[in-house]
Image (cartoon, rainbow, N blue to C red):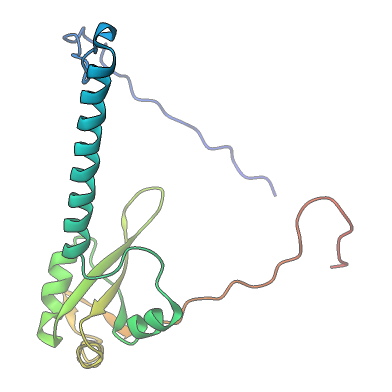
Amino acid sequence: GSRPTPVLRVAPVAPLQAAAPVQPALTAVPVAGGAADMGALMAELKSKEREIQRMKGQLASQTSTPVGVFLAAQAGELDSRSVLVQGLHPGTTEQLLAAHFSVCGPVVRAGLFRHPATQQLNGVANLEMGTPAARANALSLNGSLFLGQPISVRPKPPPAHPTRRPPSGPGPRPNR
């Protein structure tokens, strides 16, 4: 069957007004100074690189989870502390959800799922609790009211493993 072609509607936009000239972020360095100016620039660059490394260190010390991909053992441990919450009210925020579940124990992270195109909440969240015991307590809130609506709380399902698909591209195709 054929699907209707989507229609793009464009709203009128107010005409642009002239803006004040933008000042350049960098200033020109005179070439005449030669090596002395180049040395000053290199010293400034090294200083900025040290500052960036210092800031990265501060950021890394403030986060509770390592940056990068979790190893399988870490992911399994994370799943032993996580629950999936469904039936959430559209006005749900991470803070409200964490507050609701804080009676169960420490809440490390509350992540709300959103529709990729519209960024609207889809009523589902993943909660990472601080301990497996806190997760067990969180599961006891299945059926509780949150923002006036009953919610479903269940163990976070294991990640779906990719299935083998036939190769794409030119060449012989298997019979279907």
